Length: 235
Image (cartoon, rainbow, N blue to C red; front, top):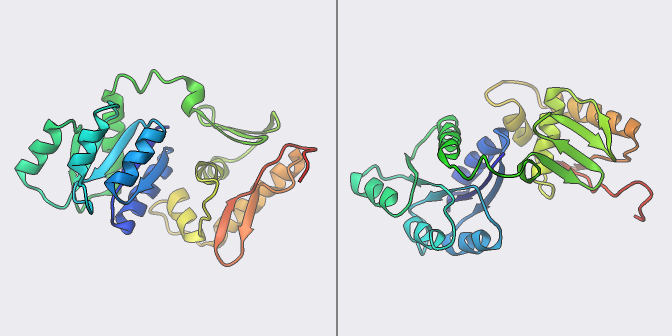
């Protein structure tokens, strides 16, 4: 799992890229302009940035130059323009790849994987830095695909694990059924009640492990990860 920043002022494109990367197991943050993105980049390190060139105000090329002053994280440029000068400029100032809009989310995800594999610093990250998600007593081991509650293993199916991982990656986000369907079953036509069934099974399994509520229903909106205080903690 990599930590990736997506910078695009088009909310639809940003959401499509975010969903594709989340489905691939990455941690994703987003920003709509270069200055907001730079503040995020200075606040916490990332493994890769996906930058739209045509941003409002300062553009993606400016942001790449600013990023290169303190980070060597790989950069993939997105642009609606397929001109040779743009591609050359982007790669010359420190970009690692260039993708022209419109693009396939699957191809972009594959390019992200290829760029990360070429980056010598990425495989050297400590396992605990990217192989485990935790919230209170809830813990997901992404390498072994195992879930734990307060240290005890909770047996989940691969689909249940994937669904819970998606919620853990964005613990404050409320996911609609359609969003979860797109992430858990990309390109597969299934009913939205399928998600309800999987969530019910996850809840029952964690209830048996001692968790009161693992997934919270946001009525009329969807689902989010519930707050997970440790057993015996004050509410």
